[in-house]
Length: 256
View 1 (spheres, rainbow, N blue to C red):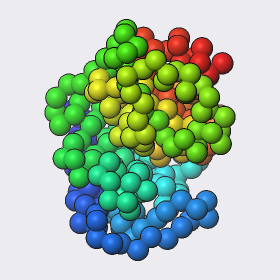
View 2: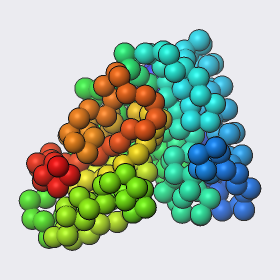
View 3: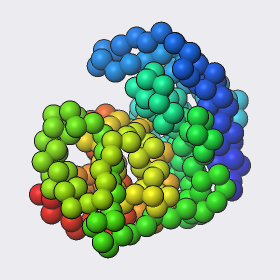
View 4: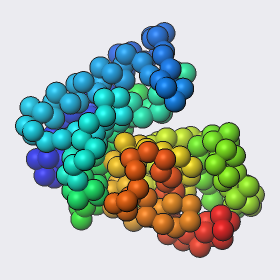
């Protein structure tokens, strides 16, 4: 493990303890311009992460969900202080703290910390993927009756024209659940399910996720098979499908 990754893990876990202190506390919720929720915990966690990164890596740019910044830098940290704020404010323990580092616009390390679950996932390019220090790997399941997938909300899938395709894919499967956000993608990386579908995400939602899923042997792509981050796409309005390789052709067929 490189010192950069080691520090990112420590910072994510510290941010996790901060957010956990606010969890199920009746914290006040405000709505941002896009009507997504934000709390004091989001703002405090991002401020903490930025301060720790600045101390450890002075002058390195940071792009964060709440404070922006770093948008013109190809080499930068990308931070989502609370991924799954809706889960957080509803008292659902599937929220996470996400930290990634990008070189040339591509994530080379990612940390996803779930403080309420006591789980931390991480990966560096070329070094495998881990959950709490144990190697993880995606799992192909050839029998559709034993396959399971997750997705974002039905309303979001419908709004972005992806619901019908997902229903075609899920119909013969054992289970389709909406355990969304980074948690669903980590279930893919750990081999618990075969795919996770997010029809609209931002860079801070995906940058930490991608190296973990890919280092675990999985695939990260758009619904049409295109790269999630290709150097020309904006930081918002992205889509992310994480999956075990054996399901790729069926996914492309269902969403074509």
